[in-house]
Image (cartoon, rainbow, N blue to C red; front, side):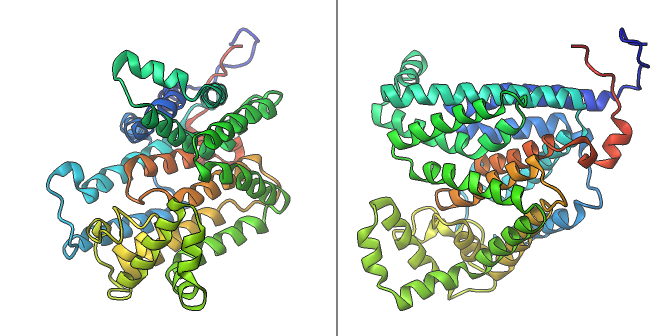
Length: 409
């Protein structure tokens, strides 16, 4: 018997272990996002490694798992004709992807299996940590990065312009995860913590000229509101639109170039956006040569100076490197993931997940699709979405095994 007289329920050791690992991840995520966003790859890999016994694929997951595995095989095959041949293992994307897929999947499975009380505690820690992250970004915006620059003086001096650029990159992290971080807060604190995150990310993004997070702070509430207002239809419409975008992106760029004054549009945009349009124009020219098979994994690196590293457009990069085969797989993946957010009644977790997913898609015009820290952040969005699910939406097998003793308040 517990102190309250309730019967002691069987404990689930694996669920408790996963919950404790998630608490550790929640403690580390905000400082990593602020000081070292690239570290998310290490964080998610560690969570996945520690929770490998919790990894499982159930009936609901099977279509997505098959798609991801098939895409991994296709990416591996494409390396045989890719003009880019890595000089060492550190730059071998296919090797990284082969480890990331099971490890990040394991991290998401851990979110399902975790003890409910410990999972709730991890969400509360994440919410308060991200609110503190937002307060620090507010201060950085007001002082041009005084805290960040001071911390770097202690262990590695950094130029002022690079420090400010790094703070701008940190706003991408908070700008992505704040809906799900706020969703996991105690209800009475939820709006205030969310406001702190939004104000901090917005102020720092504006101060350090990170345009995408500012736009994301507008799109995220709109996406959340749509999914809350129309819980059944809105996710399905999003799924169809995103799938269509992945399938038609090259045609869209071609049509703009064919029927509008593409050069004039480039000239009237800020330099960074103008450069992206240049990359996109070069990309569709190369896609036209190998539209079905693509040029191979990481081939984007070999098309300079017209394309630097990647096209700064994830759907175009997939078309360029993996061709129509990869584009269809990506479209199907996003369609399935977003479709699964459909509910018969409003769900705060589904609305927050849709908001973060929308921002993730928006930020795809800044990063390369194979960057491990960016894939890790995408996996964290899924992980936080699962953690925010109500108990009746949890993994059925996990519910049967995970009936732990409530933590005494």
